[in-house]
Amino acid sequence: MSDEIRPFKIHISEADLEDLKKRLCATRWPDRQTVPDWSQGVPLEYVQELCDYWARDYDWRNIEARLNALPQFHTDLDGVGIYFLHIRSPHAGAIPLLLTHGWPGSVLEFLKAIPALTHSVTQPNGPQAFHVICPALPGYGFSDKPKQNGWSVERIARAWSELMLRLGYPQYYAQGGDWGALVTTAIALQDAEHCKGIHLNMPIVRPDPATMNCLTDEEKESLAGAKQYQDWDSGYSKQQSTRPQTLGYALADSPAGQAAWILEKFWAWTDCHGHPENALTRDEMLDNIMLYWLSNAAASSARLYWESFGKLNYAPIQIPVGCSIFPKEIFRSSRRWAEKRYSNLVYWNRLDRGGHFAAFEQPDLFVKELQACFGAMRTPQL
Image (tube, rainbow, N blue to C red):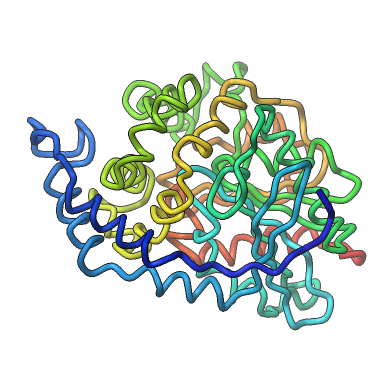
């Protein structure tokens, strides 16, 4: 393995796209749910409608061309080939910013936000723009699949730190949600020498036992949301954290199954008012699903749960931290709970719209949050 950074272009063969269409047209469907809503999972009628569109009208080449218009690269980190976007700002003094996605997301979550992030804006302490680096997690998208176990969030964080140094960024900021939030938090714990601040849109902190007798309304809502997740929304994580390989056989063989597995989360975790297409377009969801299908990433992406779920490090963070809490996020902390872990919490904001896929759903708000957060952190050295 070398430290070479190789330009990368995507080209999916017509044979792969034709195979997908044949599989979609040959789907053996389950019987219809016995309820009129999504409480048993994605309704049969919606999956059939979406898969018919996928087979007949959806055009993968649109998103392929959009990605290929951006600077894409591959490099070997700790023995695994990692795919990443690297979009440099044209503005002098731009700040290196590492963005990390989670499951069932991808680098596509950030595409709508990248132009604004790389464009200079005026902050109280001067102009601000970002060089944006978006890697795909190992086993996701166009990153390679690890051949051996051990790729926890801590190991990914070490690889990301190496990537930033390899790109010539001895100082940088980092941002993440979902698993990206956990990787970003691990970077803050391991690489405070180079990472000068982080932003999280799903901060993982424990409720403070000292507050249980005087909970605020938002803390009560947070606990209720956590219970709802545990009781009715966490089955996917139990499966992926215990038997990802078993799950992989079904999802690797059935595009309808892979789509439904991800669609459910676009419904449950977006601010969609009951239907995912109120938050994301049909093509946006299928673009993201395609990154899992085309790379056969069902099992390899799920293994991150096996590696890290239930093994989180809750050590305190010393470097500057900013948090944006979107109303339909899975876990929503209060500021006083967060301050127990983040001793240098320099930015905190609760938004009135948006969900788990913040950059995907609300790119303008996401950009403003990052600009405000990192503007509050910015030092003369960055």
